[in-house]
Image (cartoon, rainbow, N blue to C red; front, side, top):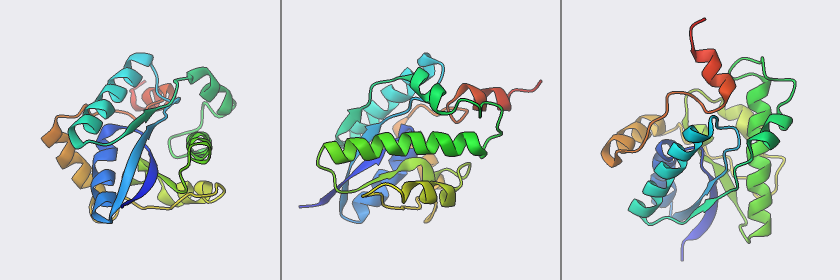
Length: 178
């Protein structure tokens, strides 16, 4: 029997290469879609639907956390003007990883990790530092072995929705020209 791991899933595109890699290591991921940072709600819904498609196509269990953007806004309050990769992102990672750790602990998962480390736009070292404060966290660097490139290939093959920004309204704001 394969070992199971709870995989915090930011989106189906990133999850695709992470699932493939974990399975190649004889680990069976369970997707945990917990993304309170995503705004607007219509964007959240598109990403969730894409995660559902990935889960169904690849026969992966998908757990959907309840969306609560206001709770996330309170967690990053005071950091709204921080740039991408700044302290706002660190607080966001901590929020997501704490929810994942909480779910893992309450639902019989000994280990969890996150898809966030596949993105070249995220600093894996920061995610690892935050993650190590939670029991059961495994620091997988999914960027390795061309993870991001592979996620793009798989998203095209599977016709997954590919977003154009990280997820929060502040990352969307930062990518728009003034």
